[in-house]
Image (tube, rainbow, N blue to C red; front, side, top):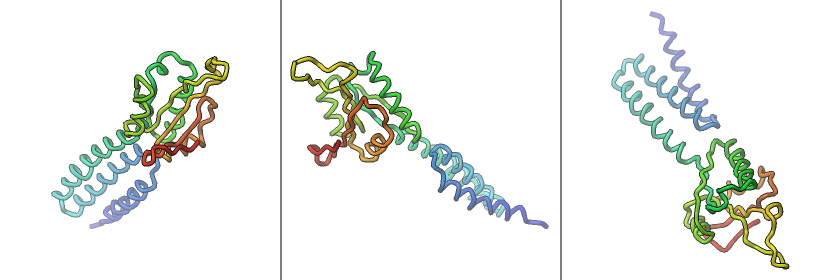
Amino acid sequence: MNDSYIYVILALLPLAACMLVFQVNPYHALVIRGILGAIAALVYTVLGAPDVALTEALVGTMLAITLYAVAVRSSLVMRLGVLKDEEDDNQHFAKLMDEFRTIFGKRYMRLELVTYTNTQSLHRALMEKEVHTICVRPKQSDQNGAAYGDEKQPYHTKTRIQRIYDIMQTELSSPGTILAYVNTLHSGEEHT
């Protein structure tokens, strides 16, 4: 009897494992993980262990992929705290949010806006780790008492996660925001 097909199936196992390890897109990794589990179940079946194959198919593939999908979906969210007034009808704010979505979309992350009623609750949310980043328009006036215009008054974007700060610092092309990193362990420290 010619058993060469067993060697072909066995060769697929390390190939799928290598593809899984080097996959950048987490959603593609989920698909490859499913393929890896199916190949492992097929190998167990061919080698005469149907009980192990069934366990691999049910637990190792279906349950693991479901749990991984939930984990990937929930972990790839960047929560951005904003004031309720900013979200309503502001062209500059909408342009900045589109740029944020583009930047984080490249990393398979989605931007979730979390609205707050006042600046104090917004800053508290950042320090208490309810949000990853906040974006506010400073309420400052010049020396003559006149408020800055919409064109000249940038937003202040503060983040508590160094990696998000690094990403935004290198890829953000909009002059509409000033970036700052806030160390939540030492809440008084800021880097601009």
